[in-house]
Image 1 (cartoon, rainbow, N blue to C red):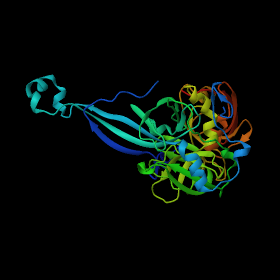
Image 2: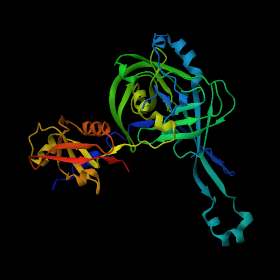
Image 3: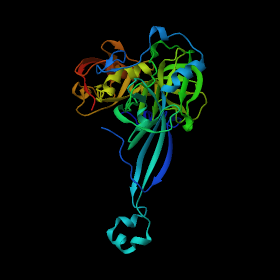
Image 4: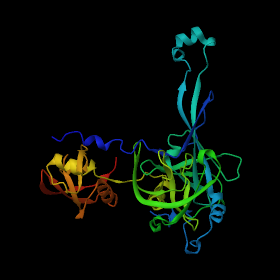
Length: 387
């Protein structure tokens, strides 16, 4: 049996240093709030009715930062989410009817406590569809948005959200709203200039500039595993979450998401092409369906190879746990197996496994070549929808 020393490394490696870029303010009120929640590719028409403003060749010419801010700014909105975090009696004895009857007037009245989360979003269609981060509106009882220069908070509905990708689509009533075109994040290069617009610390429409510092960054924040973030040194602060990261043509190439609290000039954004892949489902209010294999794993390193009795230069991902009843379990995979190839393609890390599975569809078969106690084994499994 393998020692537990290397298993511990799977938990909390990157947790401490990162913050999701939402700003939280606590509120207390004795009055309950009414709920404000109502329960592919963006280049096409969404549900055959909602045209998404995507980038065109005519809009791809570079602009100055001031021009970008002037053009894109009106479509950037402030998102405010009120979240009920506790309710009931301010004194625990007031939960007992005897104490309420006996002490009634001398004890404080029931109160409800709310937190106000502040984030950013941007309008992608003239009839009021808005993209933001899911963590900005997670568990909200009431959501409102404020337009550029607007004085009123407009009620917003959540039409679709995906916790895993940290994406949400909101909808506000009305028409003829200003929009921002969506670009192509795959075309961005390290060193390209970018512009971020958001509401850091609630400061309306703040514009910052920087460059793409890196692409494909994996980051873990609490229980969210981001696998393909764009790193930028454009300032991203609490309140920027959900705002657009723009290229020099004024097109959205990413959604500002997180900042490293222990460093300066390190912010992260979700590539817009990631959002495009699920945008149709989110705008239609559908759950995003993903293929599921059912394993937890670690990248191989010299220490783990030594534990498994393998050469130090062995490459692959070692299975830590196989979920009961999962496709992996039914396919015969076991803890301590080392995955080296999927459908004939070499695997060098756990991220390679995740990427290979994500590119498949529910019901697809997956060929797995692995090492088991030093011997090569080939198995096949059928992917199912993720629970």
